[in-house]
Length: 88
Image (cartoon, rainbow, N blue to C red; front, side, top):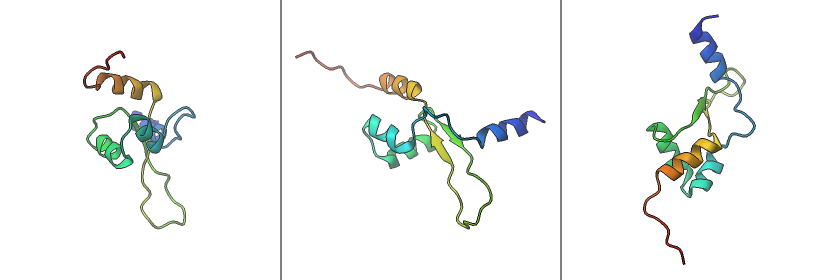
């Protein structure tokens, strides 16, 4: 098996069970799902894009599945904070 073929096989696998989906990640970050999708398209946020499953009776083009590693999202959020909170 070539290196390219193994990479394609890995990309078509399901995300790990602890990965967050788009909605959960957007809610955690306090942004809309559409804004988060835009960040993914711009490659501005760490994520894994899994190729959609091929075949099946559905004739619509399947969308890729996007997964997020919670630890990477927390680190990304902390690196992108603006300002500091004051102690009350």
